[in-house]
Amino acid sequence: MSKNPVSKSKPVKRNEPMRNALKFFVAGCVAEIYLLVIRRFYVNGTVEQLLACDAALPYLMGVGAAVAVVGLVLAILWRQAAGRRWIGWSVFAAGVFLGGSALFIKMFYDSALTLLCVVVPVAMLLGILWNLYDRECAWSLTILGTSLIALWVCRRVLNSIYLGTYVRILAVVYIVLLLVAAFLANKADKNGGRLGKLQVLTAGADPLPVYLACGLSVAALAVALFSSTIAYYAMWALAIVVFALAVYYTVKQL
Image: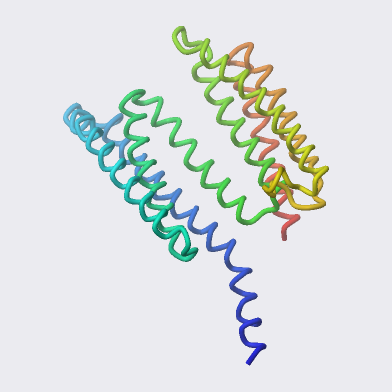
């Protein structure tokens, strides 16, 4: 009888990352469909549909806030139950997305919807990667994916009279954060992949992908600050790197 639990536990451990990746995939698809429906009626709809959606956004903010509070309470109540704790945090995340996206769309209209339609699939893919890939691979792709979004923002807003200066300031702050991330990766590499008590890298892993991701992102953001046209070409160049790395990591995992 002692052999049965062992033989049954191994498939569960192997299937857990795939199940988590599937959850991210389903959540990302639902969120993207929700955003596309809003775009259909709020941006591309008739005047009556636009006004109806505009009037509904404050209610969505309230519902999202209420759902987030319920999810937070459930997560706290079930913090000792690993099997149910993720339900509370999932409800909390759904509420934050519902209320936060409604507020963002209300404030910035079409630009907010366009950005969210890009961020959601990127976040979904990164969630899948974090469950299926090694940590150094996931970190590098996360950094590059975030940098792609930053370049996209620079491409759209850099020449804006009102927001261009703020975008440049945020881009410089992001570059500093990338340098800090490379420094922390080096520090973790010297300490068995740990920063204090937090295991951020796999023990004995090669941190080179993280260094490359930070370096390429810094270079791309630095040249993108000069003009939106340069930001456009830098974005596509970095996207090619992301695709190549994703293919390489996938083949490596297989």
